[in-house]
Image: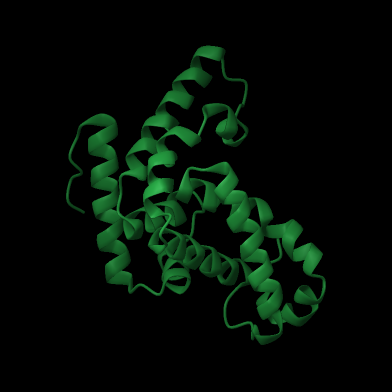
Length: 188
């Protein structure tokens, strides 16, 4: 159940359990992609919804609930990486994301075992490349290609200008493609 009608925000936020059910997987998926650590992503997901619950009365519906929750999640990731635990989590990030943990996100569609193995290897390569991006580049990349946000939604969630988003996205794509397939991105 995805709740996306900002004009009915008061009703939607009054049933906060429905909000959690509707957006928990999406927020967790973004946080897992951002941190690479399932335990940290779970913790930050809970913190995101706790903060949203406390702030629900002040939510005026100027953005969609998904954008509002994603903004909270982006800020939690940003705050996390600014904290003293930064070095510990960066060291753990490369080891903590197991393929078994992300296999549920892979589309199956009747693929052979070999095709699934190739897809997992590609996801692992992209994940390693994304982990090496700057925080801004990683956030923009994940919001665009994992969460499928448009540029305006990314701007609302991150506070970045469209120009900054495009720049970070282009740099992120170039770095990921170069690391994954060794090719430079053609200018747009």
